[in-house]
Image 1 (cartoon, rainbow, N blue to C red):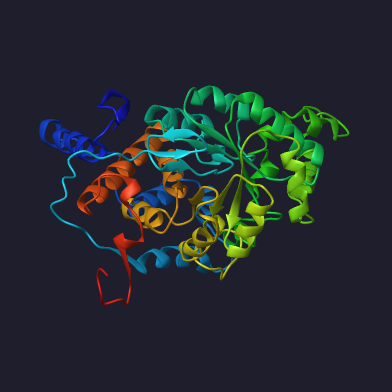
Image 2 (cartoon, rainbow, N blue to C red):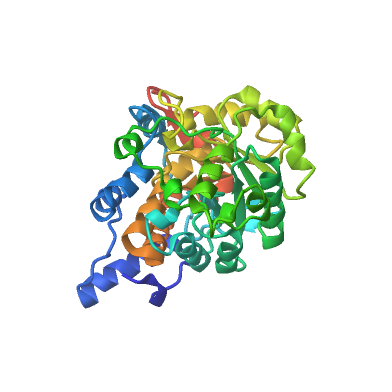
Length: 404
């Protein structure tokens, strides 16, 4: 179903989406092209995508216990709906870094999208712009940051930095992102090297070595200066150089000064799980945090990201914005993360599955379903804005007492 010709995603998200779907079923005997269930969506993507591409997106570290724990962490918190509270009009907007966002959802940085769909990040950016959902673009994108920024137009974009062992490349990326109009830099801390991902090992598959996901590097003047020959003449040499400088395991907290000296954009650190790291980050002058375990892709047996959120928020939540990533699948997940102190959330794998199944239309449909679910969950739990949502909205599994 191509939603571009249908009613737009303006509020109220939930009833609008329901009316559209049910009217299409009644009047034209049409059902949605994509399933509403994230689990069914993932299964359809598995059937549609090349096995190695699906494994790259769906796979996590080791036995994938961290990804499983991310979902179990949500089940430990239950929403307590409230009644007769006039929820006819809702407001899903939030403010981050002086910018009002229409929804508390940001598309997480996911690299190498060309292995999922030929239009890659350009298709994702078109869908994000259509729905006005902010996008965080990965350093490892298959399209240049400039081209993706052009597709985003006025929709908010942030740039995610994989901190390269070649400092000149990192400095160049920061400069390019600022010039292209990105409004923040999201620095992923948990990937100084890639985790042990058994699915990728079994396929002997690293997409970068096929020339996928390296557009920002091959187009970068600092990276090109580091090569013995231009990529057009020696692509293999350029790709191996990429693998040599992709991450930097020698980084310490002192290196944050390097970033602050080279960009005026807000600096957000992604991958924070421990309150002490959150405190250190704030004292070092960062502008925001993302509680995340990279969707379980880096450390097997790690803590569920939602279990880490309350401790981080208690430590620094009033001092800097705290976003949440890893395990978000439905509207109820957003409500629970906001209730536990997140200012906004990042959505990852579901939109990528939509991309793989139906390009920009697939991303758009996933987002419209997701926002409809969020809108309805907020209303049916008895709230009209996210500002009303705090820990009193939840009870922890095992508690028998509701209220004070």
